[in-house]
Length: 329
Image (cartoon, rainbow, N blue to C red):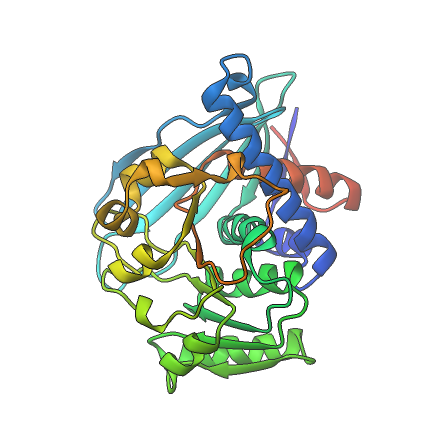
């Protein structure tokens, strides 16, 4: 028996960030995943195809370690993420273990630092595909971390009409570094800092992505123009609020990855709207026409079946491209 080990470098090669074909493949995968998840909530016979148990955690002196098992069709996995609990610590070390379908043993172990950001951004890509202006030109992204970068990639993949991308981040160094990285990746597009004229940048935006861990609003509803689409993915606790109440109340359509999960973790939505007014992405009407003046909002706190979806894809692609190391076990 051997285990496939996929390093951070291997995963980066497989993800090919900036490759629009790969990005759209992952977006399509997340659309299927949302559909399977929602079907599993409604149909007992479908429940085995998309299993997403509640995560459990263990506290250490420096981290809260989260364990998130899931199963999507033929892929069973568990993601382990360590969330820093002490000042001065940064990063979210993450690992995914994939189970061999036949033997029940571990088939693969992969570095998942980038995978969470990419699968989350791909989920936003699904919502953007259906709700954003087909001719969207201006994008504003709040946050210059991995989520911010991944959202830029996915937004350009599903809306290649985007020409100007404004990045907001409290820390100047990280903001400017991301802008320079993106300029090299997309030399035919304009990248600017949004901090200096944030209100103006938001007022012009066709698509806005909030990817911060802020507990106080960084986006205000009074700035939003008719027809803008929002992807809000940064907050994951009841005390976290990236956007203000007015933003939620102005949204005429609120889509979520999971009504149940958002009801427990999406502080902004719970405070300013009701779960019966949310629609799961797995239930969206894909044939509905978007009202060009309607403000739409997608809220994601992440569902673990997304991890099984993308880790299964990584194992498949690694075999095709002969990446990773097979270690006897």
